[in-house]
Image 1 (cartoon, rainbow, N blue to C red):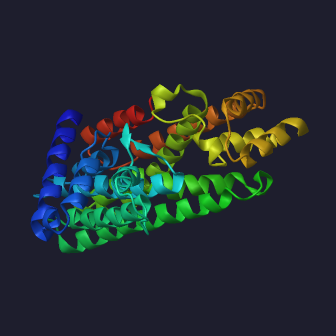
Image 2: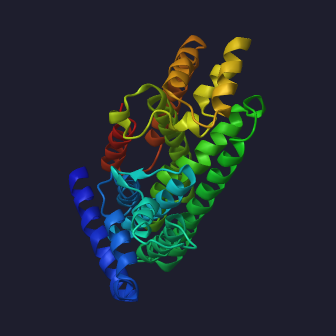
Amino acid sequence: MLFKIRKNIERELCACIRNIDKSYSLSKISPFLFQNIKSFVFRKGKRVRPILFIMGYLGFAKKSASGLYASAASFELLHDFLLVHDDIIDKSDTRRGKPSMHKMFNNYLAKYNRNIKFSGQDLAIVAGDVIYAASIQAFLSIKEDIARKEKALKNFIEATIFTGSGEFIELLCGIKDIEKISKQDIYRIYDLKTARYTFSSPLCSGAILAGARNEEIQKLTQYGIYLGRAFQIKDDILGMFADEEKIGKSTLTDLQEAKKTLLIWYAYHHSSWKNKLTIKNTLSKERANNSDLLNIRKITISSGALDFAEKELSKLIKKSDNLLASSGMNSKYKTLLSGYSREILNL
């Protein structure tokens, strides 16, 4: 069933881009803009968010609605919009194995041998904004009850607001001394930046459109929060200990961005004075290197931070399982969602 859902999402994602061009003649306004958006959106991805949206809807709906998969594609477009801006903030030149949006534009501008007053980053910000507008149009494609659509759209917009807020406070946390960061601060960032738009919002938007009761929406929201925290902890562990080929990005990324992950937070608060100083010095470096990474890995293990993170991960998965078990979701999709959640977490 997952294969069929993914296939339908890919088909509708292509159709969404064609419809945007048909509605606004984007390829005529700027073929260059349209082609870059098209190539970026069509890159191979996991499509986690639209898949969860479909599960949230079918888990409560009595029948499938017209435009369901077009609406699901909106969450992939929302994801792409956020990736474009995130790559600019992180100064990342690659995305899904290819040049990031701003890198593509910078490569284009490099052909011109004159002083240009703007950069590829500037162009990418605009392209990201266009993708976000396209995501809202796609969301409205579903033929459902107007009141439900309005409520679900509000949930969709909230996801964007929460994600942006999470990014904002995470950046500010990057300039704070680690002793001033609490566990609650870290989970707040995880909830806002990851859990809401990756898990809670897709599931709840689908369920809202299907007519699920408020108590079911509340359960799905918390279910998504637990899953999002677990996902981020697992990502933090992989980001520090996995091979770069496995995770598709540099294992130095989090250190170079001075991110205060749960691993780093616990390691700092459960280490000797010497190791605390090593952590602080590493986070303050302009460019961390492989030697720094190896030192932080050792401290993470010796401090018990890795064990702590793995225990937190297990607790969160158990909490999410209990919530899902108490949900009124159709048993068929409940089982599908449970299995898919473990697939996402690589369990």
